[in-house]
Length: 262
Image (cartoon, rainbow, N blue to C red; front, top):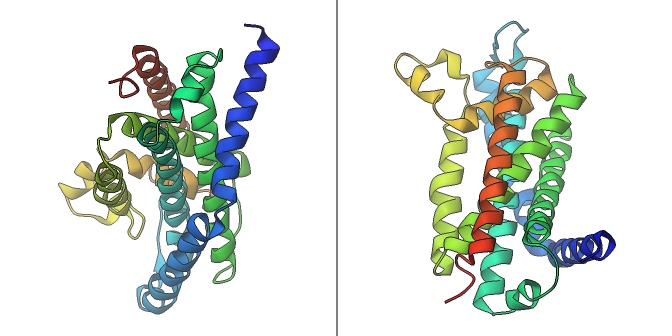
């Protein structure tokens, strides 16, 4: 197969998957809009007045509402990237139309890339929407725009890649809900979204750094605020390597036909 035809297949599949969620804004954008308005109103405004400011390492104290914004952006981005990729794969298996994609001359690597890119696109759009919502509640600045873009892209690609794995593994719709609601979201909430990890007593502080979400939340927080509780360069390097590894696993599973054939 020629490079041109392969890229055409990749662009076509990516476009189909992106249009699928863009055509259903009530399912894609309205729920995170309503949820995050409530988050900012309750946690940021009401509780934020009581909490006051949060002190971060090597930085001036910031209003609590501004402190939680990066974590909410991460939560929205990874949840939607994961949900989009896992739903696309599982829905295609469930309704048996994924076979049309599998029988095309497109390489498995480009099939996987299309699902990952589409999922990451949804994650980035929802994350950006949450940042815009936050701007109506507080003054939002971007101290390190390149880091913000890099972390936003990497975490969205990473969880879209995880979504492909779960979409292949899931036996029913409950499996998809279980992974997102009972694993992904709790890890984010315990990843320093609503509190500074360094303020936790031992051993909870040390245990928190075993949670990969801590590095994602702090990476995006570094992009917005310019301060972080972890080394952003090291975090970005590790997350990039993990993304490449999970994407490689996706391709290997497609090549083996895992979850795709009876």
